[in-house]
Amino acid sequence: MKKKIFLIINLSICICILLIGCSKAVEPPDIQIPDIEVPDDPPVVEPEEDPIDEQIKEMTLEEKVGQLLIVGVEGKEISETDISHIQNMNIGGFVFFSRNIENEEQLLDLLNSLKEENKINNIPLFLSVDEEGGIVSRLSKIFTNLPNASILGEKDDLKLSFEYGENLGTKLKSLGFNIDFAPVLDINSNPDNPVIGNRALGKTADSVTRHGMEVMNGIKSQNIIPVAKHFPGHGDTSVDSHLALPRVDKSLEDLENLELIPFENAIKNNIEMIMVAHILYPQIDENFPSSISEILIKDILRDKLKFNGVVISDDITMGAIVDNYSIEEASLQFLVSGGDIVLVCHGNENPTLVFNRIIAGVKNGELSESELDDKIYRILKLKKFYNLEDKTIERIETDDVNSKTIELINKFN
Image 1 (cartoon, one colour):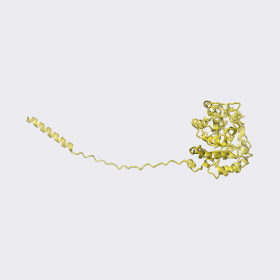
Image 2 (cartoon, one colour; image 1 turned 120 degrees about the horizontal axis):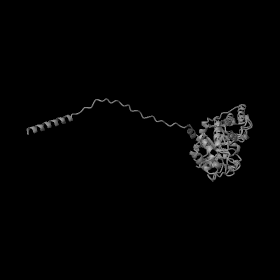
Image 3 (cartoon, helix red, strand yellow; image 1 turned 30 degrees about the vertical axis):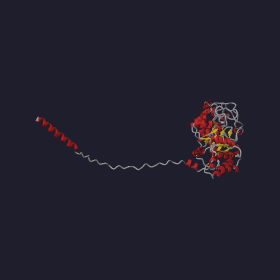
Image 4 (cartoon, helix red, strand yellow; image 1 turned 135 degrees about the horizontal axis):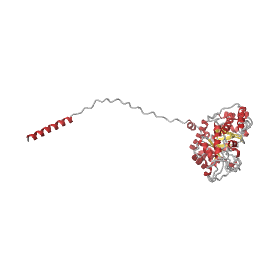
């Protein structure tokens, strides 16, 4: 019994000692906590302002609409009408034909006069011409002309095709032009075609595509803007759109398998401007020809082929349009359908009629201001990319250009 009590007492004492030890506070180790420097809020990076956007914000409606027009010059010297187009409409540019050209001195004087007059504006002019070589040459009174473009497909030498485009660009650059309505990317697939023929680079999509890209790049090499034409393809027409409205009974699938191939490749190779033809494709759009068709321009050229550049109409005063529509309504419809620049080649009064109709169309909401600004952005971006300026040129060396042209012609023999 005593032994049992003794054990209980000892056990109690151990438990008490244990409890006392556990209740004793344990002091934490002496840890030095360094000062933490809290950084300031990161600086707010303001997005860079787009100078083109800023320029557009400063433009009036009239200044914007003027940029949507490239118009013809009626005579061989600057006229009061031309001056009015610059001063009152802030016109985007001019197009020139054989009727405007007598010789080198006269043409330089005309171009320089327009540039000098446009210095009241802060946007340089587009100065354009159809210089394809062969039967479509506006500059043959000044320069030795190249053979028809069909020779390029026949020779099938890509280097010669580049030199051909380079030669075209050199001629334009020496005179102060900045747009060449070339190359022709139509396929000469219809022997009864009255308007394309040997202007085409070949009779197959492959030939036109390969040589068309080289001509395009040759023109670009001289800082001249090439224009691929005539979308979606004028090669299978039997009517000249200068005189009447051609009708081509083809489906979109048909075009994809032939006519669209060169244009699709031009887009992939960074063509900046495409001209749309006046052709009715009833299987695709039974109501409107391609130049004023939302299906052909917005749905196919813009959305399907992913073209983000400048879309220009063929001459809106051609028979295909004037025999079926008013010039003013067709011009507005072209813009509403996705086009950017209306080409008005003939008639002193026509540019003013088109200008006023577009102004009214914007004011009444037929063409939204956001759509208008998108068009102006594409146009100004192109002018800036090519560093266009209204710089006058006093004289040129035609002999040097002509000797190089003859050397190139000899390579085709």
